[in-house]
Amino acid sequence: MAQPKKNLDYSALDALLQFKVSCNFCADYLGVSRDTIVRRIKEDHGLTFSEYHQLKKERTATKLQQKAIELALKGNSTMMIFCLKNLAGWSDKQEIEQTSKVEITIDDDESKL
Image: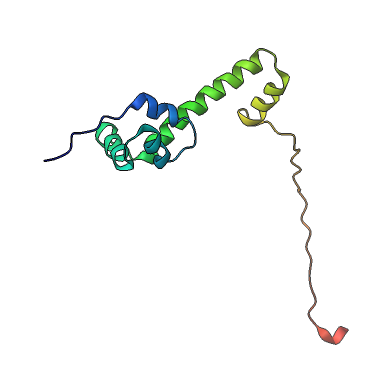
């Protein structure tokens, strides 16, 4: 006789997956096996654990970006600089482009020594 199917508390799992945690940690925390988590995600979402975890981390990253932009727009100068560098491609470095070419020739003729 097969064991009854264990339910997976997706709200608790999703809360854990906001962070960089392993499937083993989630299993231990939720009181289910690692295989249960992997199977349920595959059955319910058609994803691997890694794919599902990445999706949840991306949502967290988006929320953090929204908060950073909100703080920058409210006048937080540190956050303005951070957002400009990380979200708008600004940089402190000045790129110097060299337009002239220098040619170096090496004379291997030992008789000239």
